[in-house]
Image 1 (cartoon, rainbow, N blue to C red):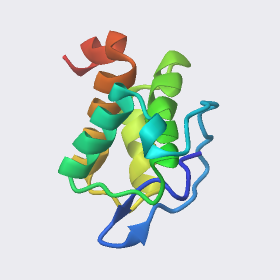
Image 2 (cartoon, rainbow, N blue to C red):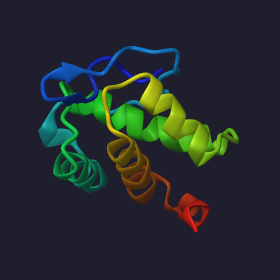
Image 3 (cartoon, one colour):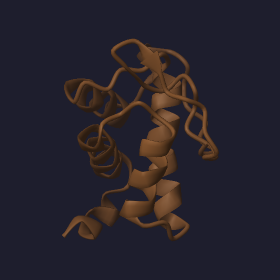
Image 4 (spheres, rainbow, N blue to C red):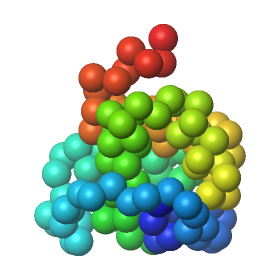
Length: 112
């Protein structure tokens, strides 16, 4: 499930939906973030995607990768994000592309 603390658009928090959280152990403080985490957070912020907690945003980025690993399609992920957040279609797509680029670049061929 997309974490309810992940992202907000114009002050509205993500709606906790029927998605499952990735089982990812990430650090709770910004100082403990990896360079991939820092890049991911910076890139989603550049797309206008805010978050309440870096940890939750990172978990949702990893959720994208684990879902792809489990056989989900890009379209299915996009639909899930749109149904369970206030993100625009463009922002949902940017979240997926950024997560793949940051955490699972082996799936970049799915975009071609």
